[in-house]
Length: 192
Image 1 (cartoon, rainbow, N blue to C red):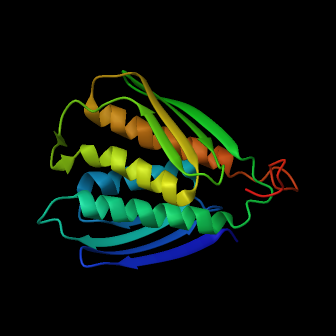
Image 2 (spheres, one colour):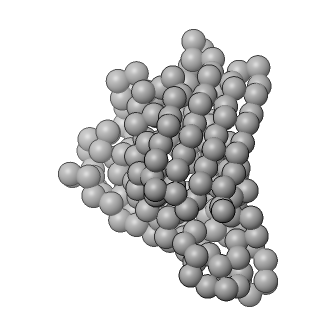
């Protein structure tokens, strides 16, 4: 079973995450940030991972600490659930349209965390959601999951569509990258 459970408690947040990579896309999400709940539910659905997230944070300050710590925990859970990465495909990509928005996600489960993006979000808020946290979410997740992640916006104007297409593309690319399709560790080094 490729599962992991991560808890993180700081003076700013209290995060509890359970993840099953070989799941059915079930989600039980409660972060205190409605749009983030929607994005994490979307991520679970399209990755087919089962995901449980309970988060409490200092939302009276802003959303940054909560979003960042959820990403740290989710990235850590992904890395733990993959264990030695034996048998995984390693690489994955997805191109996702959402109306006028088109986003490309490319992943290498490389053992080296890094995030590169080719887009900027033009507004600071989408409803109550602080859009600058999207970049921080993906950066912290990639770093803690020890994956290489590229996100590229190929077209799009609607902020909701761009962000949601990004989460969907990430989910599909990661689902492909962690799929079991071989017997060995996919690296000439013998380790990832």
